[in-house]
Image 1 (cartoon, rainbow, N blue to C red):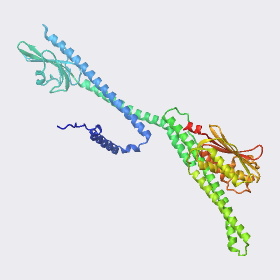
Image 2 (tube, rainbow, N blue to C red):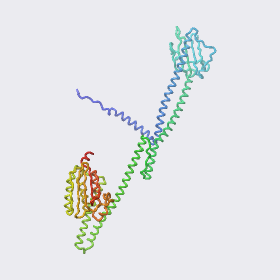
Image 3 (spheres, one colour):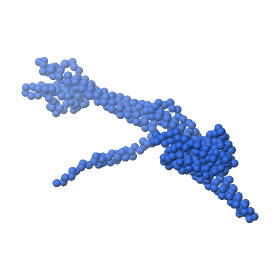
Image 4 (cartoon, one colour):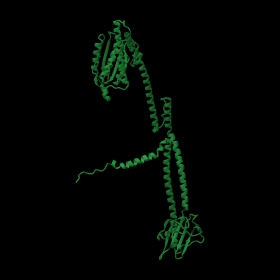
Amino acid sequence: MNSSVERPAPAATSFAPLRRFLDRISHWTDDRTAFRHRIPIRGRIALFGAGVVALAVVSFSSLVYVLVEGSLYRDQDAALTTRGDDVMRQLISRRGFQLSPFDLPIDITKSSDIFVEITIFDQNRVASTGKINGVDPVLPTALLQSAPFDRGSIVNARAENGPLMRVYVRQLASPTGPAGYLVVGKSLSGIESQLSGLRLFLVAAGLLSLIAAGAVSWLVAGRALRPLDAMASTAEDIGRTQDLSRRLPENAPDDEVGRLQKSFNQMLRQLEDAYHRLQAALVAQRRFVADASHELRTPLTTIRGNVGLLLKRDDITADDRVAALHDIAGESERMSRMVQDLLTLARADAGYHLDKTLVDLMPIVQEVTRQAQILQPSRRIELLDGVPAPMVGNTDAIKQLLWILVDNAFKHTREDGRIELRLENANRAVRLAVADDGPGIPQDDLERIFERFYQSDAARSDEGTGLGLAIARWIAQEHGGRVYATNNPRGGAVFTVEFPGESKVLAKS
């Protein structure tokens, strides 16, 4: 015996044929109605509104027609039944049913009045108050013979020589068997005329409602889509005039269109900001390229001049040759530093980010202070305050930043000058300051000195690429901090770098 139990097929597998069938129907419908994609949105809304109204009108008209038709037939059947029962009571009375000699016959083909027809077998007589072309109506024999004795039945019947009628039929009973028939009828032409008029009214009302619904939907859709037309016109104008300051009025209600207007304006604001940033970036790039070309021209000119001097003149002295070679070496080194700085800034502009780990600034500052004192023994370089300052950062980049500030202090401090370094840890912020006793910085240049290739007038005669402080600012920003310059009241300049401390970085993370 097999112990394994057959598992039922998954629901997805069971409904796969149905899903494929529905997909085929959907694709077929899409192919046959592809023209709808060429209809404008306003037209689609109008057609949809007209379609909904048409469906409602058709449903309502059908319901009204069925109710009215049923009511007419019920009223007619009730009238026939009442008249038939009344005639039957007269027939079973002692006097029997007597036709009045003054009764005028009813023309069934033209009148909707009720007629009565009695057939008596033993007298071989037919008495009828209704005539068709001057003769009594002749109903099908099968219909008469199928009528019950105890009650009347109401059916539709067509006389052999006349129109369709609604008749009440009942057999007359006697002790020996059927004694005759009782027929109470009425032509259906009246009801058909009323129903025909009702159909005409419903069709006309439906068409008028459909036209009105289409027109109203068209107008309402146009009013609802007016903000979208304004957005399209604004977008076209912006594309033609490049004026990103254009805005849509934000006085619309808080609906889908209103939110779309706000989103469109927000997008325009973002595009305008991005455009201005791009323009500023292009201007800065042009200035950067022009400044780089200008800065590189000087060392290249010096190198080319000295090389030409060495190649063209044979009578140059040994001292001049050595001086020329020193100039070439110095300018080459300066140009190499500039190219390296340009590469650093280019990587920064390309979105390069530094890898960061938990570091302590104290050993870095101590190491740079010690090395700077060895390089510049004539100047006094001191670390006045030094406390452990843990932070999340890149050791090499922080060291490069500190060397940029120290090297800048070297350039603006006399040979026997003093450079002070301070390291403070306020738990939520780490502050590093480098102060010198040089001439200071003009007030108007305190912010501009961090621009690329910018050098204040006091430093124009000094060597430098003009890129160091720009690199320092990028490094500070990469660590979530900032660098700024101030003038020391006692003389000289102070460059301060503020980094977020370890506790602040951990709190944000």
